[in-house]
Every structure is written in structure tokens, then in C-alpha cells.
Image (cartoon, rainbow, N blue to C red; front, top):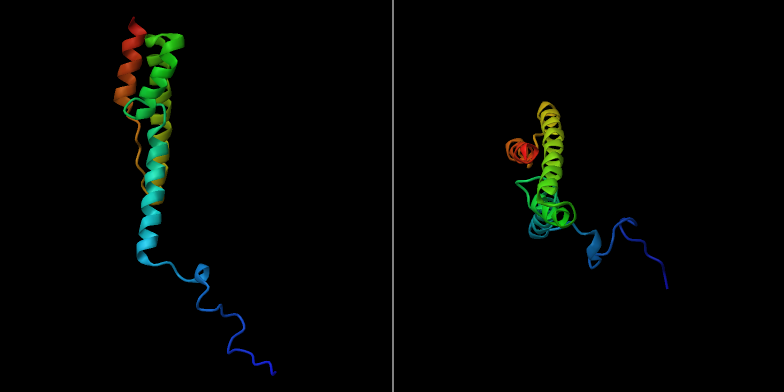
Length: 117
């Protein structure tokens, strides 16, 4: 039996699927899943317009009371909104704008309302 090299030794066989280029449907599905998971994680941040703020307020409210839990979550939301504003400013200056989900107004109102009591 004689050994006959192929045209190129680095080529993978056609039936070896992992080395094939992904199609547009699989790439679109991957990106949709990635962005969906990313938005789910961002939504869990403890700031008030997000679901994470309500979850944190409910979890802390049982131990600390509703007023103190709202104050803590409001302060966390203000910190996240300020950090998000700085990140948004830097990324806009770099030419890649990002979304800042935390609202300063909603968190400031929650902090002011619970500091007066």
C-alpha cells in the first residue's frame, strides 16, 4: 500500500463539523442568547427602576424594616447611577456608547423620602 499525501496536510476533513464556519442563523441565535443573559444580569442590579431594587428591598425589608431597606437600596442605586454615568461618559468619548439602566431621579426620590421620616 502506498502512502499518498493530500494536497494540503493542514486541511480538516469535510465531515468534521467543529471547524466549519457557523451559519448566520446560529450566530444570530448565539448573540440573542448572549444579550438576553446580559440584560437579565443588569436587571438584577440593586437600583430602583430595575427588578433587583425591588428584590433587594423585599429581602432587606424583613430584617431591617421597610424604611431602612428602601434607604439602603436607594443609596446603592445612586452609587450605581453615578458609576454608570461615568462609564457612559468615558465610552461615549471612546466612540462606543453604552446604556445606563439606573435612574438618578428614582433613587434620589427614594433616599429623600426615607431620610425625612
